[in-house]
Amino acid sequence: MSAPTASRVLTQNALTGAWLSTALPVGQLEYGDELNGPGSLSGTLAPHLVASSSSLADPGNTFIYVESGGQLVWGGIVWDVRTQGSQYAIEAASWSSYLQHRYDLDGEFGDRGPYTYADRCQVLRDIWTYAQSIADGNLGVLVDSTTSSSTIGKPDDVYHSYAYDVNCLGDKADDLVSGDATPDYTCTTAWNADKTAVVKRIRLGWPRLGRRRTDLSFSSGVNIIEDPEIALGGDDYAQVVIASGAGDGSAKLRQISAVRNGRLRLEAAVDVPELNGNDTLKARAEYERAWRQVLGSVDTLTIRNTTAAPFGAWQVGDDVYTRINNDWGSFTGWCRITGWTVKPDAQGGPQAVISLKPSAMYNYGGVG
Image 1 (tube, rainbow, N blue to C red):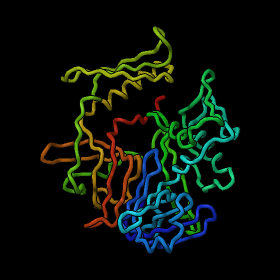
Image 2: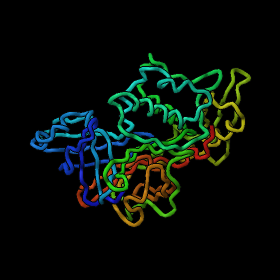
Image 3: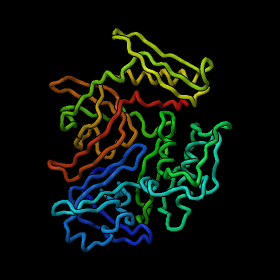
């Protein structure tokens, strides 16, 4: 993501590739990326501008891009255009949203399955290859060649995709990245080297996207604009976690991770039947306990562009040390960026709303 200098919005016919607008005057522009999701864009147009740009009256057939500082920083598909008072509101989502509108009509992703001990990254690539192999279905999206040790399917539980399955390709892709020991993905958009074509990409990360950023920070009084809410929830808290794995009855694997920390004992149970080894099950129990012992979290914060965390320096998946101090208390700790929305035209200057989760919630070791 580039720093939010003057932004330019471009639109393109999704099927022919013809450019429809290279400087669409979108107001109230907001856009951003998401961890394991498409991210989104929203904005408004005056009615007379929509009338002169029929592409935006044709949702589901228009690509929309944001360029900042000469670089494409966001791209996706317009899905909704509707009246909102005296303006038209535009809503778009990035490339993975397309899979929510496609199905496996042939079964096994066009004979690429079924799968036994298959790398989830490869299955994701197969889903995209299948979707884009059908006439009028090729977005030109490239999926990273990343490999992982996170697998799906076993000899006694083969992973199938049936033609009669009513789950869309997007749901099947989401299932592949829904666990704590599964690959990450995000959508990216960029110009090619000579800026003659758009590179649409699904970035895959294993065991994670992003990294721990010791060079950045989010801090009250430095770059955090508004006092964020600090949530203290006891419902999920536990110092004792009982993890159950493969097997049934008395033969079912079980590992317990427990500590004493001067607080009332609270216990939680987690069932992960796909884990068939005590070592991986023990690691899962310890991981689960670690994040459940994080009392206090910050879900979102709004920042301005400063040297502490310059816009464009952080990415989805990064861990950033966060310090919050206000009249109600304080919070310090590593938080993982799970999404962001840039508001380049915000009052007082560009702002970014950052979505966060405690870093301890994520298993970076790839257990599973």
